[in-house]
Length: 339
Image 1: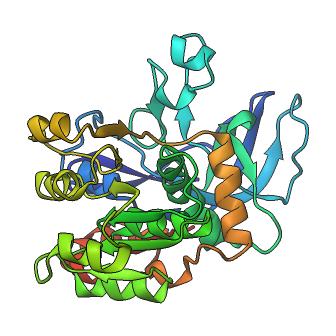
Image 2: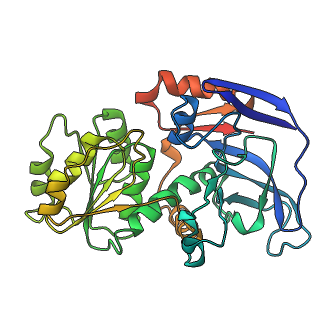
């Protein structure tokens, strides 16, 4: 079978490898779609701190079950599925307390473990999630990033009836905003300096779309949400300027969820955090319940992802997909690879 791998930063190659063996507790997936993630781009640029080369990418995946291990129950050949790309130890404190998403030995397929960029991919059945009828391959490849959004929003607790601010309207920020709405938030405001991304957010049903380089964010919050401003804030960019916007515009005593991946050490005004008695809360990946909620949001159309797909590339043009992202970064959202 064909397998796509990154031999060095910026260098994507193809090779022939055997179809992986299927252990008794495994499922063999015929890969159909892979979404390209912002973290994949970090790897492409050699800037991901926890990935070495060569590496096989592919962690936002959907496909068809081609084979089921002898000890696996509840799955059938021909069933469509996705999977959680986490490898956890099961023995550390987080794992034994149900928080395997922050396992002390956590590895992620496509980064520290082999990803799914191949014709077939063997994955432990415990990681596999069936796709319900009506959720197609494109939507199935969105379940992983949508589960990131679901887990992030859940870190605020219930958002029903709340006013939520999302900083950053890229793929994850868009999904976070849609998730907050889908889980019952009264109103959601999203910010970005890209007109393209704000227009997409507006089409996805986000209530208020603000460019903070042209508008005063604090004044917009008061005008749209009232004097109490946002009940919760989610930072989805991972740079100092948006983190600063979050802290400065947070209501005293409120929570900020740090969703964005910071490529460099961030500088935070801890004096203001202390003075306003804010809580900065991290969020990492997801657990199975987040996948289930993500699928419910997709199946109910409370989250819409079709309009977020900028372009499809065949697996044979994997490298061209990255080139497209490089040249069209401000005019693209999610790129799909078709196998």
